Length: 179
Image 1 (tube, rainbow, N blue to C red):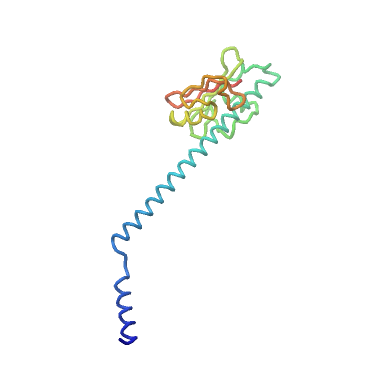
Image 2: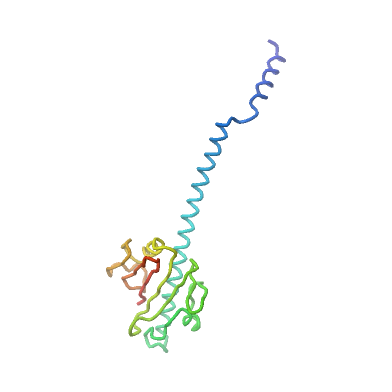
């Protein structure tokens, strides 16, 4: 055979192989779909982690501002006049980047964060609402060793300035007591 005949056969063979088979296309689409699902799950986990970090920051800011409010000369070491988040804002204390909706803070989830004194004014309570009880329990893990719905021991204090006894309601409201 001469070289012209061989090159002609190569051109004809190349012409037959121009497209992909249905099986090759299905495999490629399947691989792309798997990569997309993995990327979506990684993004969702990252987003949840970022929201939890921001929520923890907001709670700490509320707690810190409330303690500053209590220690002011006018308060005499009590939370007596701390009736809502707006009182902190009105007195110049930061609330962690949250907006106000009436007297309450609006948290990272777009839900309410409230603060009020307990009986006698010695302590104050923050109620930080999350979308679900699962979100609440995950956030509460920053305040307690107990992954359940209630922290019960004094050793559960992970964040300074909060008492043990954090509780998540079934509606997703995290309740913390500020020292």
